[in-house]
Length: 190
Image (tube, rainbow, N blue to C red; front, side, top):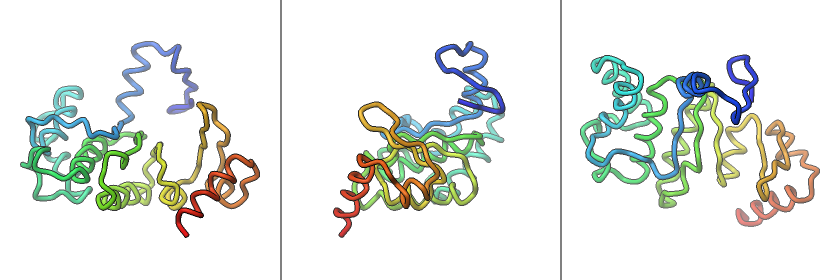
């Protein structure tokens, strides 16, 4: 992986390199990983204050801005139990963007959501893509990926079968295994 102009091999990284990598990345988990005893605002500020040693006032300002950006203005004082699954996932996204990372990793960000809540989370991720944010998204939401991805990697059985420009992946696919997959998605939609 090339990160900030340097080729990194994850198994051989030193602790300093790992810490530097973490400072410039964020991760959004599929099951939110929010602190149940903290408010939405506190869930976003926790990492900024504890890990990054940011002054509380600055962390609160960044967190409020991030919560606004994901459509949760007015929910700063709500605890996770008072929020829907989609709102909890948007708090997790706000936590990620508040750190102003160079890259955000999303691990199946809609997999733990009821179908009617998925759209709100995908809309937030779409806005991030429109802002030019670099994201790596693991998803089964193929139509969504088609609409926002600039590059697509397709994995099957733990192997990378394709790593292509999004247009080429969806419009000029030559691999039979991927064609079968894409055709099955199209049949489900029709």
